[in-house]
Image (cartoon, rainbow, N blue to C red):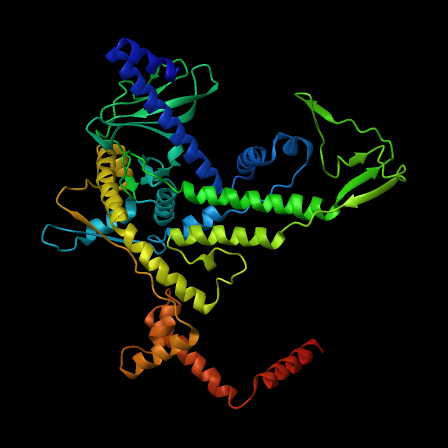
Length: 504
């Protein structure tokens, strides 16, 4: 169709054909975008069924359809996509601190408390998801609604492949229409998938026949908020709304899965077993014909059969196994190289991705924290802009709910004014220390009167109050004094004696 439209334009010179061609191009490009993002999402979530289907396509391309059809392969799936994305998404590793000020910078504690009250309890978990989706797709959307049952704002985060976006003609980064599919019960009482559509002024759904219908009791199909209730987290601006996601990570993941599958099946299982070789057994194995060229399948299920083998005389019948030497070490090295390469490209320590490295070692923790600090700096400003958009939309959604007297009285809602300003502090990532470094640092700080044992106990147990920490230290001191010079084994011996006496 695209080729016909292009030919029509060049032969007739009609502008209408060019416009149609451009629209068709936009549709095709968006279809490709959705397919790529959908694949990335399945790899990130580790959907074994879907990832296996993608892997089968690659096996067919490289080894041929017969390999997939004639062999029950074991597909080896390793999810490095999720590992890399999660390690790279560390802005919300610790919860963000939000507070409000007036135009002079004075903190408005009452509005800070109210904002915390109406945000969902799992706000940090939601923000982690939004950030990770932004790492995966470059751009993620969060839908803001009001939960009339809980009296709180609700945040719905879908993978970017679920959205269809129409942008402003003069600003491709600004969405003017957002659509996504959702299942509703139709007038016949049957489940049906509708396309839900949002614009600045309208909110409705479209059925399979293209008919616009209202959602709920919104008969006039009006958008109650007057804005698109979707704050956008975009990590990098590109030449289109979505930008480039982490398809390179998914590609490496697919290569690694292919190599692992090939190594397991062809190298270890089939290669170690060998291929049966029959000479002069006259089994009369029939080879397939394709285009008059004989093809011989070679595997444990398809042995090699040679009849009428001659040297000077007819060779005696024999059965043997032909084994291939798989380059296991070479394939393993290739897998490691590919994983290390993509980790370095994403600014990560490759040793944190490879399974044979112990991520819990003290040195490893120190290196990881240094690299995460660098990655965090690139994402802070996009996340700060996302928080600002979130507040502006939450303010509108909250104020619309406030206009409902029943909701206002039930949940003690307040109207958020325009003259307060959100400030967001993102927690710093602390550099990890070895136990020796930690206690040396504490000893130095204590010698300079910059800390005490009470501080260290509260640092390790954030839920403790100062009085509780002091009591624990005092109790521990009494226990240590009562023990005196007894060794640990002698204490265990005494406990055992006491237990025996109780049992008697």
